[in-house]
Amino acid sequence: MGSWRTRCAVSLAALMTATGLALPGAAAAETLTIGIGTQDTTTNTATTGVVIRELKLLEKHLPHDGKYKDVTYDLQWQNFTSGPPVTNGMMAGKLQFGGMGDYPLIVNGYTFQNNSESKSQLIAVAAYNLAGSGNGVVVNKDSPYFSLQDLKGKVVSVPFGSAAHGMMLKAMQDAGLPKDFFTLVSQSPEVGSTNLKENKIDAHADFVPFAELLPFRGFARKVFDGLQTNLPTWHGVVVRTDFAEKYPEVVDAYLQAVLDADDWVKQDPKRAAEMISKWTGTDKEVVYIFLGPGGIMTIDPTLKQPLIDAAKEDVKVLQGLGKMKEFDVGPWVNDKFIRAAFKERGLDYDKQLASTANYEVKGEDAFCKKPVTEPRKAGEIWIKDGDIQPFSSAACTLAAYSDFKAKGVAMNVAYVFDAERGIKLFADKAFYVTGDKAELAPFMLKADADAYAAKSGGKVVSFEDALAAAKG
Image (cartoon, rainbow, N blue to C red; front, side, top):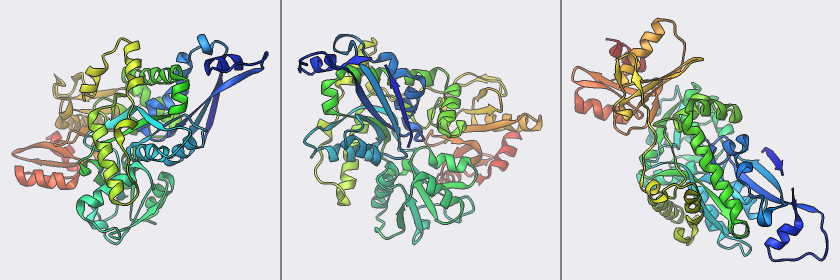
């Protein structure tokens, strides 16, 4: 766990005045402590945590007039590897803001229900995927397993209490699998990753970015994706109500910083991926697949109804497993602050609330000599020490990849999109279908590729065979 502090100057008198208290005489300067719980390695939360911290965006917006005229701010950034410890810090009063995934957020709200000092409220979303992609289950790349059903009687690790744990519980319920179908053990992302690599466990379930990160690093293969639960996945921000009611201007400052961070990523996603990689240790190519154009995650702070509805379904999952009693999601959601932040910038909150559009791949395909007109059928290649180039289709992407390879051009990675689901994929990790009557089509899941091949009369091929087909 790391901690970063920034200090700026305010008097205790100003704070006491702001809270309706008076001091009998002059007082020594004191600070307003703001504890913010982040998950640096959870790529979804980058724009509500690490980007704000490293670019000092919150400092730009903290108030310094009125009751804050002489305040010294003590920003205590605390980094965790999952959501439950953030809730512990908030309950202890050490953190005022917390960023985490859907299931931990709900547990946060539920836990605060019985806190006499304060409740918690959901005030913004960090990023989401309406299809549910982001969480996933991976096996060792040499494993014979290709689905959850293949893991019967095996050992599967997952960080307990995390969004990925919630995904696993939902998946088991959906498939009618008994609790002892496989052995679930609690392991952090770091421990689970190492154990999977060393074949000490059979599978590892995890949240963003690990289901993409571990295959990218060459020792894992995905067998289940969160989209198979048919439930959106998302991360968001909660705040202690006692703090928010006392210091609404600080809550506004934080949300203004979130909006700045969102803009910063979208203005130059390649730069953003490189910097976030530097700050967190997550490979830049993995950051980009989540937060870049057409990325797995849509960066958007608005509190959308499909996400709130998903939260209500999450509650039912936890109740069905005896892990939660009554919890009403509605009163826990508070859009007052984010609406005010939008209004302050002259932005239309309701318009953004109604939109589920992401920013997309665009530009001119230099290989096939045509523009990108269908972004979710496009592709990209990241040239080593160079630019990220767009291509108009999966076939053009792979043909260009072969051409670059033949010319000795080094490449970091290539991206394509799942032909059925529109999810961004690493090109070399996808399953491909090709054939005389079948357009070259990439798929995340082998089952989807098999189904498409049967329907189209094509055949499922490897990445290398897909390259040859595209080149031909």
